Length: 277
Image 1 (cartoon, helix red, strand yellow):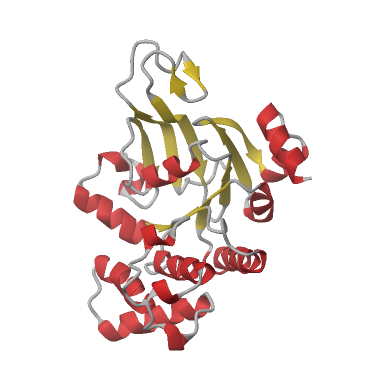
Image 2 (cartoon, rainbow, N blue to C red):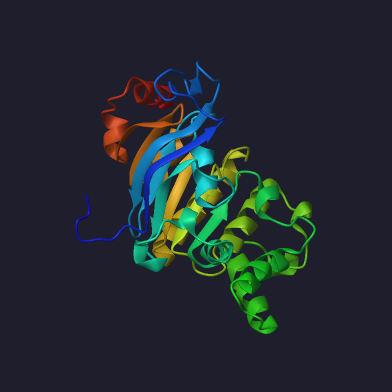
């Protein structure tokens, strides 16, 4: 615990269920499906904190609830119940899922940045790379065109996108370049929290290495807090300070990443670690 620090993000008892539920729900689950009514518990009583400047890794197999959690935090999905608070929104005293539509837009544009596994969800593929970044800046209230252009140039240079390609659309870019444009867009307004969802999946190994190195540099340069989702424990080993292990919508183990890797307690975590060796 970090007794002297206020978490950047606190999530408590998040439940996201698809289906109406029934009296025996949550007590009669086969994996994450209720045997009584068929409801799917995509996130089942999830609680955790993210502290200033740390990378919190979330690892688990496909269907474990990792992406559901991330997209609920970014207001793409609506939780069934639970709360989440941000240090930079109402001093952490208000549940962000109870915010108004305008407040949610403010949170997305000023406090959080999201990088999706599929760049199509995070970018306008027919807009230029610079326009994608400008869109985020405009959403935060800026209208100065020259400042937006300069900001876009600096951000794209930081992720090693050539200035000469600023006016090109992401649909003409490689997968790795699209992810880097997404990262630039997510950083446009200096968010306190960056959400990274499987950002290296499907990329060539050399491109993966560049993406991971970029994330390390972003953390070092900006002191930003990062919530990093991956099914790959090697990525978590490289980047995460602490790690949460998810299975069937639940957290089955959590702790310092070194502890998780060197002395896993849960059978599923042991399986993950052994597959990495």
